[in-house]
Image: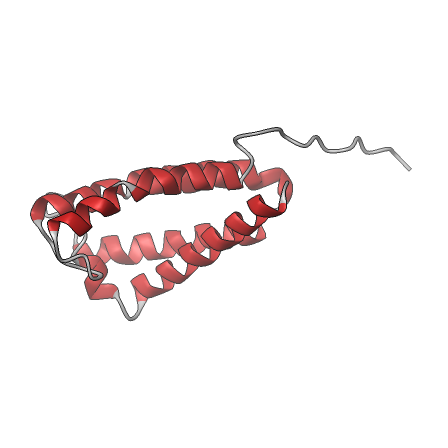
Length: 139
């Protein structure tokens, strides 16, 4: 795996873990504003659960052994897809949070979600040549 992939995987891992911690602490109310009004769950429960998942995914990106990285990348990409409706709801409902206080800013954010999906997949080896593991010889 190239240095660029490792760097991106590390960056995504730190980003997700930090966002997860912020879900559980200082920005909990801000994250609650992003929970779609149509979701039939308590907003705080959604924020806490997604925060725990983000911390776990961030740590997995940082610590998973090489043989599990493709699976981790796939799960992280699926998570980014799963939270996308919250970003759409923030745009459609005109909810201001995280400095996204105009329709233009909220719309621009929507275009970054596919970038995150692709980044997670690329950083974990889903695109480009795969390095094969050397065969293990018995001792």
